Amino acid sequence: MLLSLFDTAPRRLLAWISAVCVALLAFGLYLQHGVGLEPCPMCIVQRYALVLVAVVAGLTALSSKKGVLVAGSLVMLGVAGFGAFVAARQSWLQWYPPEVASCGRDFYGMIETFPLKRAIPMIFKGSGDCTKIDWTFLGLSIANWSFISFGVIALVALMLVVRQAGRR
Image (tube, rainbow, N blue to C red):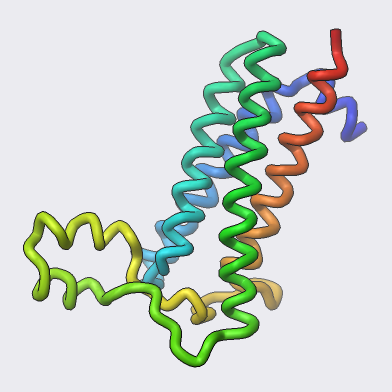
């Protein structure tokens, strides 16, 4: 049944991937602004990867051409692979934290120390500690869940590439 999903509705599957990425991004923003968790630089990179996956999946879902589906799925596979790598690295840092961890400066320190023109780009780099585990669900940190999410997206993208490339 799962394999038939890749044959009959790749565009619908891509639209779902895009929607799930948007939901994950919304949840990350809720954790940041609603709960008060500060994202670290690696979290910000993972967010950018999720945004790219959402955009690529959404745009690819708009086309019914086989070449666009294969190319979009390949790009999605690459971006999801990169996101999984960053999430895996952050998970490693959380499991085996170095003695001295520095992932960025705090928000108020940046505003007070640097002119606004320089401080604004620094704000988007994140200021939390990459080794700190602020939130868990079922015993896994945000980085662990991010790795799982990117891994599933990468597997789906790979299956889409294989199934679409094999079709005539």
